[in-house]
Amino acid sequence: MRILIAEDDFVSVKVLQLTLEQEGHEVVVAGSGDRAWALYDADPVRVIVSDWMMPGMDGLELCRMVRGRPKTDYTYFILLTALNTGRANLRIAMDAGVDDFLSKPLDREVISMRLRVADRILDYARQIRILKDLLPICMYCKRIRDDGDYWQQVESYIHAHTGSNFSHGICPDCFTQEFGSPPPSRTGLRIASPPAS
Image 1 (cartoon, rainbow, N blue to C red):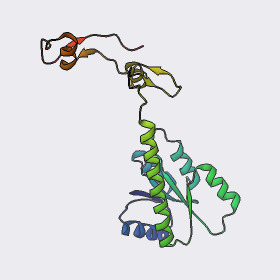
Image 2 (cartoon, one colour):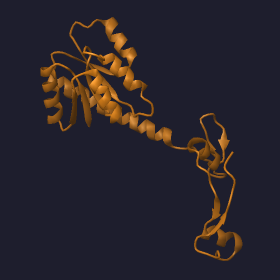
Image 3 (cartoon, helix red, strand yellow):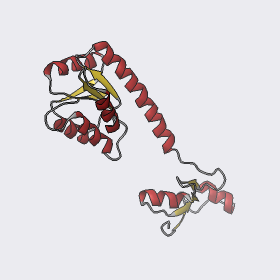
Image 4 (cartoon, one colour):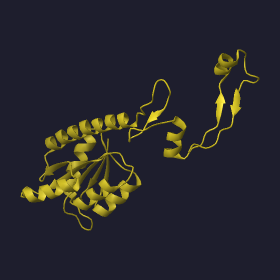
């Protein structure tokens, strides 16, 4: 996995980077929240490990920015905290979208375990995305059901979601089946149709 570390403390960065790289992860390091956001926005990663308190943008604001980025696969966000972080602050962090916490000083075994959890949850997120991307289509009339439980022609559905228009044709097999003889050319018969409404 590609993992982004957002941390301004040199020792914490080194502990995290060595641990992650020894486990085969690709690590990207940012010394501030602003730099971390710039790197993430240019090329999103699936896991971020961020310090809570950093100069400029802090870890909570970084997490809010990540959660607000449109059309982005789910990113697992781990926040580094001090041991004396109170429950009220942890609740604020969860409300900002943080998935998990690591306490300082960092423990390499705990880091490893938390990343296993992250990997498992990201795998579930991938499976859910695949299921959501499946289009329910009627096996008889080939109409597609949209999110509002409305059935519409494939052309109308695709036009509404992508802006694509269609022209209709008859493939050689269907032409032969419908007309009893092969089509006049190998490309089949092409019939123009207006854009889907």
